[in-house]
Length: 95
Image 1 (cartoon, one colour):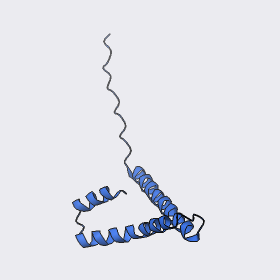
Image 2 (cartoon, helix red, strand yellow; image 1 turned 180 degrees about the horizontal axis):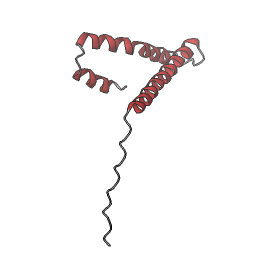
Image 3 (tube, helix red, strand yellow; image 1 turned 180 degrees about the vertical axis):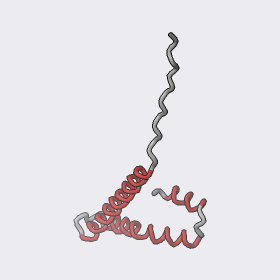
């Protein structure tokens, strides 16, 4: 979820300021660290640190995509089916 959307959702919810900051920090820290390590080791792309951090970035992206896909699939399955159209009432034909 983009940061802007998460910020707006937190703003209209009853989430407190401190829990929001803690959740943001805990959620952002792993990927931020992986990007920092990948950037620092970009000069040697075969190094174990670069490969590990790149793998972590890819896996976290795939994990997010799987979670989003499953949530979307669950929401579609839970949506009520559209009501069938009522049959049109025909007027009897005049003789």
